[in-house]
Length: 58
Image (tube, rainbow, N blue to C red):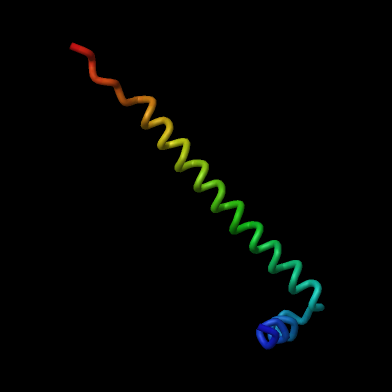
């Protein structure tokens, strides 16, 4: 892991702190997109459940 970190610092030509900040930004973006997809999926499932009719009794 350290080798990868050092490689990123060298390749990006920035400080180690900036590499970590960028990694955290990317993780945050991914997590935000995942949560948005999950929310949309749940909303679609809820909408689908609301449109279904219950069978009429007797």
